[in-house]
Image (tube, rainbow, N blue to C red; front, top):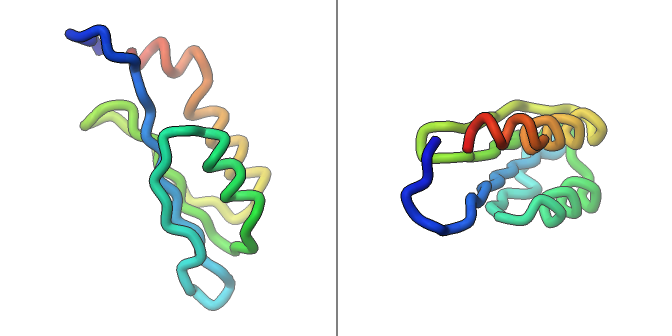
Length: 87
């Protein structure tokens, strides 16, 4: 993806988490990865949906059932080789 402006490449993070009753616990949009990690670790949830948007038509998303799985996916979606390929 070639940028036509000097604006910094920004990722968008969407997260939704549900508890064991199926009630929505977290529904958030952030542009800072550490804020998403804080939300994931602070709430009690059973299922999490994470979406990382690189561009209007390029994104990664997945469902997770443990904190370790969610953090590993978030790290994989934002590793340098992935971002270099997208950018």
